[in-house]
Image (tube, rainbow, N blue to C red; front, side, top):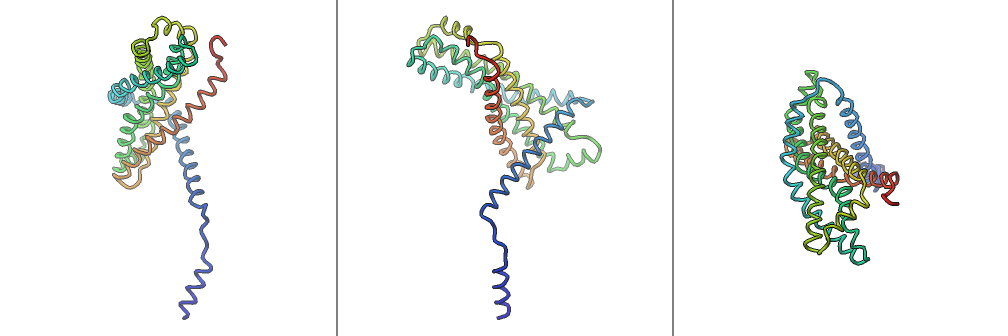
Length: 279
């Protein structure tokens, strides 16, 4: 009887868990992760200017990311540009603005589609490989060994990979832009029966050089985010080899979320500061 009364008292005096506790913990964890990624970004920026610069590592990572990203980016750019051109061509035909189909489709490809497609490929192919490499090094305690020896893993491993992702993203953005525009031009002329001269004339009439620069700037920033998130998740795996696979998936998902958020901010700022040509 005494044990039963004690059990009843302990049940009555136990603290009830709030139904909002999981949500609060999730928000706190997300903010902590964001703060850690921001701190790593600052460390990467600082270590970029430190010497010695890991030139060999940078070249190796640049070549690897480019080799696994060029073909997928080109293959994705062709249907991407074609779909944009077909959709905009149908819309401009409905409102009687066929002559502006070229400008609308090319600007959509250069400003929005090319940086996004480039970063999706870089994050999915190169970023996942970076995350897996750093994650395997971490669980084998190579990162801890480097820190014990006084070697900065950020300067030695992270900085070359982030810079390589940025460089590949900038170059692939130009290739994707060209392939997307050519694909859109081909589908507009062949499938929709558009006029080649009207397509090119409308583009030259409404496009401006700043549109190309903002697309390149987006690609560089997105490449930085892809390399940064991949490095951060690779340096913080949990659960051994299975944890490495988990952080690879997480790095790709987080990069995609940050990509669209940052793209929205840059697009709003650009359209607010840079007036449209002819406006």
